[in-house]
Each structure stands twice: as C-alpha cells, then as structure tokens.
Amino acid sequence: MGIWIYLLLFVLFILLLAVIVVSLLGIYWFVSSLGDRYAPPICCCGKLKEGLLADISQYLEKAEPGRTLIDLGSGWGTLLLPLAKKFPEHKFVGVERAFTPYHVSCLRGRKLKNLSFIKGDLFEYDLGKVDVAISFLIGFIMPALTKKFKKELPKGAIVYSPRFPLTEIKPDRVVDLGNKMETFYIYKMKK
Image 1 (spheres, rainbow, N blue to C red):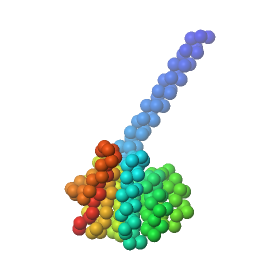
Image 2 (cartoon, one colour):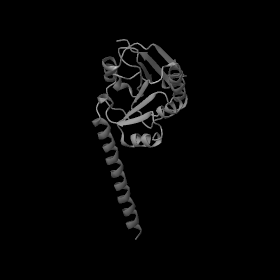
Image 3 (cartoon, rainbow, N blue to C red):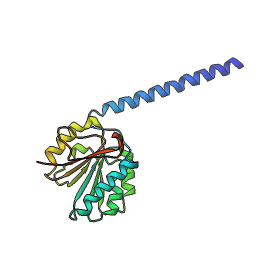
C-alpha cells in the first residue's frame, strides 16, 4: 500500500510539472507572436506616476480648454482617470489592446463625460488632432512609435514618454526623479 502512495504522488508531480511547462510555453508563444509593435502591460505608479501627473497638470492648467490628450497603451487608466477628473474642460482618450485593462478602464471611467477608451491597435489610431500624447510603452516599440508621431502629430503637440526615449528625436526636456525607471522624456513636435 505504501509504494502506491509514493507512485501516485510521483505521477501527480510529473503532471503538475507538465502543466507548468506547457503554460510557460504558451505564454512565451503568445508574447513572441505579438511581434515588435506590442508591449506587455507596464505599471505606472509611485514617483513616476506622481511626476507625470504633476507635469501634465501644469501643462493643462495653462492650456486653452478643449485640448485632446491621448494615452497610447492606457492600461488600467492610471494616468487618464485622475487627469479627466481634474480637468473636465479637456478631452481624454485611452487606446488599449488588452481585453481586461480596457474593460476595467471603461468601468472605472464610465461617469466621466470627457474620458473615453478605445479597444484597439494604437498604430491604427489617427493622431492628427491630438495635443498631448502619452506613450508609456517598452523600448523596442519606440522606433515604430517615433515614426508614427513624426508622421501624424501636429506641430506643437507634446509627447510624454516615460522610461523609454523616442528614437531619432532629441527630447526638449528630461525629468529624472531618481533613476532610469523614474525618468520621463518630453518632446514638442516640430513638423
């Protein structure tokens, strides 16, 4: 009887190990299938979030009403929700590809008339009428995103790029809040 218990435990262990390996392979396959245009969700919190909110708030306080701010890869709406509450005279748009963050953002922002979320590919969204763009994405996306910004954003549009600088464009300002993970780059588009 004793040997059967050990054998059963061994078989269960092997099955658990197989499930873990298959799960990890599935995650790897999914992430690698996204290509070089999509990033995993990145948390914006702590000093970086507070620094971005303060800097963007300073800009919006001085701006004429009716400005449009877009967050490309808006995730859970961490940046847009407090800004939309504070500045009802401006329009805020989040573009998010991931199912769960998109729906949670919509739910959280449902009472704000000046805030909308779009589920889709950020590279498909036209930036021609955007005044401020936030792109809290990952480094390997920046070359494609820089091309999109240069092609579509109007002259004078402001770009906030946390952690990862755009390529081919020198930032107008760099805000360093302590280390690279708490740094954001600010660009004024010059067409």
